[in-house]
Every structure is written in structure tokens, then in C-alpha cells.
Length: 391
Image 1 (tube, rainbow, N blue to C red):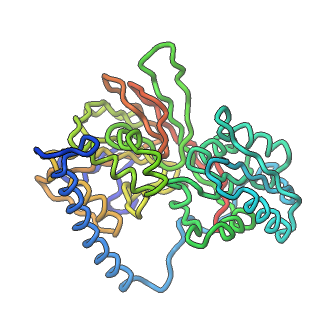
Image 2 (image 1 turned 120 degrees about the vertical axis):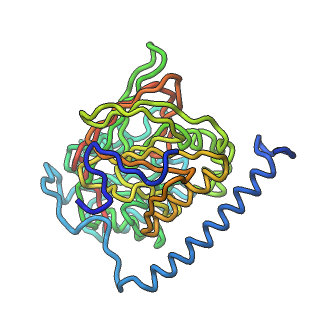
């Protein structure tokens, strides 16, 4: 195990535990200015470190996933049509996308592709099942992270590959897989049709509802889920702002919750004794990269068969948040330092299953989507159960 990596079930610390004026949407101008100044300072540091890292780096970048083939592709029909599961609310020009998919399918020697649109009642599971029954050689999830989760939950265990056409705000899985998002729709579809297949892990979360008549459904996730500040940030993100600013809208929403209360909970990882925690946010992850290139869990790998868990805390107001945010940013450029007495902290665990309990109902987010409020979670990982098509 690499130095600095938490052993299964063990905890590793990433630091110490732990106005007046007019308002705009519940946030004082002093808070907005303080956070903006903090972000500008951190961005300046990050840019400098990234430039330094680029100048001292080797000539090439290693891929996120190793170039290995799927161990068992099941009954995948290699010459079947491509199927695309589309969230129509994310498309401005659906006819152009349909024509492009036809063109690229013909170039790849594949039959006429299947076009399947999601609905409010069915965000993708039923469409993915239809694609499997029709003999699709690849099922492309075209939409946001919710569409990706829906398609992935249906394809899990089938050996049939999932391609990605990210059209959402976060596009978390696509970013963690280093898909060619900067090269546009054509390159993404070409990757989905003719790329390399890789098995990755799939996470599952079951939320225990506060009300006995609410169903305790199990939800799939590919990147990360959490309770606390991150879920409150997702819940507070304005849809119109997300459309204009993309993932930065989540940070704007986060400003409103900087002075929220800390959460007390009990965490049990595998068969280890439960740990009592007081924190801002608990995050469980299949992989560690966030929008903007930040890395929350540096040791998390999407195909290692483990769940990585991070407990984030900040004390002392903006100073604590600055300390915590600085740690996350520095991790993204490969700098990890544990200094005593800091007001911001990150603690890490690793395991196959985890159980979390707390007292009052709290919102839960999974891959950037809210799945309701709960008082407990059971989270598990299903190693290598999903096949994805990458570069």
C-alpha cells in the first residue's frame, strides 16, 4: 500500500480535528467579499503550482484507467446497434445529435442506432433495459449525472459497456474518466462507439428514512455521495444559476451554508468499532476528483474495489473554511501536509461497507443529485460490476 494511504477500516488524518450589512439571498456582503477574496487567493496559488507541476512533469500523462480489457463481457453482441439514452431537457438540437450518431455508427460499421428518450417517470432504467433486450452493443448515457446513474444501475453485472455523452452541470464520472470533453460531441461519441472497455466499481447506498412509510430505496452511485455541507450545497444550488455558471453554481450555494451547524454522527467501516464524529460533511467515494480539478480523496481509484471515506470539518468561521478549502486544493496538485492545530481537517477511511447514523433527518446527495432526507445510511461497493467505454 502506498505511503499515506489509509489501510482498510483505518482512519488517517489530514490535519487537526476539526456581520452586519446588507444581505443578498441570506448572505451578508462581508461574507461574499471574504469568500471571493479567499477564492482568488487560493486560485492564484493553484495556478502557480499547476504551472510549476506542468514545467517539471514528464512529456506524457498516464491515463486514469490502465489499458486492460474487460475480463468477462458476458453476452455482449459486438456488432449490435449502439443505443443512446437521451435526457431531452439537456438538448438544444436533438436532430443534429441524432444525425451525427447515425453518421458515426455507419463509419464504425454498426447498424442504425437506437434513440431512447428519458421521461420524468423513467429517468433511464427502462430505456437501458429496452436497449439490452434489443441487442445493443453499447448503451450511451446522454445527459447529466442522474441519467448516467440510471443507465449504470441497469447495466451493472451485464458486461454490456456504457458510453458517456456528458450534458449536465457536474459530469462527474466523465471528468474522472478523462473523457475528451474539451474536443466536443463528435470525439465523445467516437469514444463511446469505438473506445476501450474497462470494468469499474459501482457504489450502492440505502438511505433509512425518518418516516416509516417512506421506502428505503437503494441508489447507485459512480463518483461520490454524502451528508452534511455537500448535500446542503447541492440542495441550495439554483437551477437557473447552474444553467448559466455550470458547476460554479454549487460554490455560490455553498456560501449560504458556511455558518451552518456541524453534524454529529456515528460511522462504522466494515467490522471496525463505530467512531463518533462531529463534522461539516461526510463523503463516501468511488473516485476522488471534483469539478474544477480539485481532488477530495487522493487515494480513491475507480476500479480498486474499495470505498474511500472522508470526514471534513472546519472550526473558527471563515478561517476554518479557508484551511479546509486550502487542503482540498493542495491535494489536487499533489501536496499533502498534516500540521497540528489547524482549524480545518480531513480524516480518511477505506472499506467495503459502511454504516452511518445520526439523530435528525438530513439531506443526502449522490453524484450531485438529492435523493431525499434520512437518519442513517448503508453504503457498499460492487467491485468491477460496470463496464465503461473510454479512450
